[in-house]
Amino acid sequence: MLSLTERDNAGRRRGVHVQSLRLRLLLCCFSALLILAALPVLAVGADISTAKVESIRLWRAPDHTRLVFDLSAMVEHKIFPLKNPQRLVIDIKHASLVARPSQLKFANTPITELRSARFDGDSLRIVLELREEINPRSFVLAGNEQYGDRLVIDLYDRAKQTSRTVGDVFPGQKTRDIVIAIDAGHGGEDPGALGPKRLREKNVVLAIARALQRKVDREKGFRAVMVRAGDYYIPLRKRTDIARKHRADLMISIHADAFNQASANGASVYALSTRSATSETASYLAKRENRADLIGGVGGVSLADKDKVLAGVLLDLSMTATLESSLGVGAQVVKSLAGVTRLHKKRVEQAGFVVLKSPDIPSILVETGFISNPKEARRLAQPAYQKKMAAAIFSGVKRYFQGKPPTGTLLAERKRKSGVVYIIARGDTLSDIAQRYHVSISDLRRYNSLKSSRIKIGQRIKIPVSS
Image (cartoon, rainbow, N blue to C red):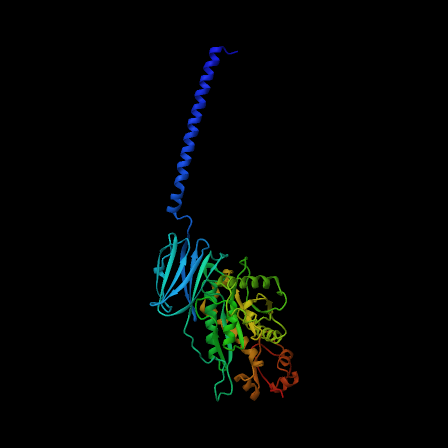
């Protein structure tokens, strides 16, 4: 038991301890207040509240120039033109520029210079010096699996030139060429699938498309139209508008496949399905390819020509004849591709690719191989192999149109006068050929002096003119 003196001494010690605790608490509170008072200054100095323009990308298309500002976060913006001299002002709220505009190349664009400065405190003003009047359009895009948030500025050319389309028949001309619209998938800010060593789908398919263009243009009675002639993006529905503008008899969209397993390989040919996709792979591919519209800006922006392709009617009964022709062309291309590469599917697949949804133009989509497969990627990157693929595609297309040339074409006139020569492909039978050209097997054998119905690959047979 403690004595009275001992209790007094303990009480004094507790009092001193409590006072010490109070003093330390007051010091902590004072320090916290000092830190809080300094925070607004630190935030402004560090520019924490502003988004950053991390890079600027530029593409030139036939009718417009596209600027893409890669952002660290979504922004608010406005644009307005100025005259004397011609300029376009882009104001981006709460943003700063860390990109290097000096690296941009403005040759063959309406832009002569890009300037920037701070504006209204913490905002960014970008001024484009222009050499001519343009029609500007702008929109922001949320990030996706390929890119972060973006601000897109499209500068559409004002000058409009009218010219006769390649499908027109000139006065005194009795026949026309068969017009093949060649669509190289993706492009510009949409690289498509990526292969080993950063091999980009957009570059591979453009090379094959150009080889196909040369092949088509060398054949009398055919004419090629390039939907995408360079490294720029075209919205999917606008691609069919371009084919329609040139009165194309066929549209071929060229892609290079990709899958999450590197072992997947082989080429495929697709036509549109008016119902569900014909396989799980086709369904996956349709979703992957159609997402490109979100990259190009169509998904979240209302475009003036957005509904011209379908015109309010989504694949009604008028689609039947077009789809039948698409499947016919596709079947011939599959046969030709079998001679130069392994097929992923040995028949024409069907899926809901947007680029195939033209009610009046037969359309096929050719997946030239799996860019995600290292072995196929090496082949797809080789110019010689690209030419082989292009030759095989055209061989199938040519074979189809020899059998069913469009009315008014040079091939139709040739067929009317002397019939057509058909080159036997893998899988052909005499009965199939007879059915395709609406002649009897006996007439085919008699016309070609065949002793039996046996035929071989590469053999040429003449198709008699049906009455």
